[in-house]
Length: 538
Image (cartoon, rainbow, N blue to C red; front, side, top):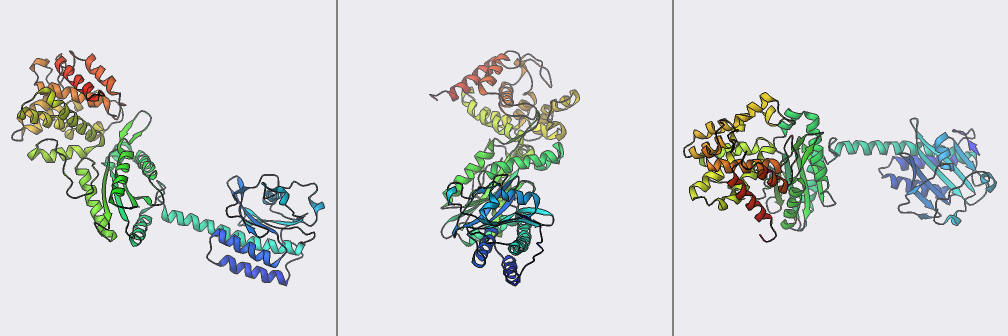
């Protein structure tokens, strides 16, 4: 039978004592499961109960969170109560239900909690009360007995009073859990926030016990410029994309968090430094090809990484973070290489002398330029032996390869990072970077040949290039070579308005343009080098 809330029969003295015990129990600092267990144990001890369970609403489902079935506590019930049963009816109406005899169930649907062994269900008497707090129906509390007339309206009133206390406790626990999550989790990425990471470092330092702790700091090259050019909404999506990659590294021994801005951190415990080094390599691998893809836009994302280990390099958090941050800055200067040792050798792209500051500025200006310059320089080193250059010419070639776009330092970022094809006037401005580069480098002693190559690398074999529009025979041979590498790199790397094509397609395109845009001899030499490099026998 259905009993309205607040049964007129009221609660007797025994009930008031029980409610007092329940109130004390619910006020204690317990987990939800501990609370449910203590409550069911108390009810089992004081009234006729063979089955006691608490079911809470979870989205569109009603799940049994705790059940004591004939003295047996199921460790992880994971029971989803089907719709149409007594629990759902109680939750739907908010009205308590009392069953005294088997006849009361005759026209009603029964769903045994133990669906694997339904024959063990011997319930005859039962009470179902809704857990209601602040107008919200959170779940159902039920007690059941194999005996007839085990409960009456007084017991219903008692269970309703207990249910109200329990509902308040559940609501408060959920509110606390939400507040705790807000306090511990970065709202944008869902990763651990700054304070949680600091606490995680301290806890792990205190319990190393012979293990090795690694702290990895990561950030995005020129993230502020991404915000400036594309807007903060795109910036947030870029952060989320990086967070998703890093989150895949998280496990019981690895905490991944966001320090704020574009700064991320990984805190991990491994057996030794080699284990941390493997994690660094994994983090680098997972972020190496990171790019934000909008509708038709591609924004390459360059990630820098500095890392330290404890106790070898420090035993207190501030010192370790300071060292990791210094190495993070060093990573930025060295083109994004993961830096874990102060003595890590600087990768040399050639002897640049006084031009080194220009090289560093070009490498950190924006992710695409950095990847393109490094790629062109790498390919130039690989091709140089095929060109049979003298020592001086070899040095000039690799210098020019890395510096060929140095004039873009004077091109506005709104043009350089535009995520679409340039307008005619913007393209004319972009074309001037070859002249800008020649002018910049001509002011440095020993760079006259490099300056000439940089100024000519956009001339064409058919004389339709820029800035001078002269035929290929009048262009420095090394400028013709740089032109080939520049085009090859542009085709095989993602750009803001162009998706990369395969190496095979890029080589075919170079050959198609041989004799018009490019020097035929240079194209033949370059394509042979690339195909030999990628052949199984090489």
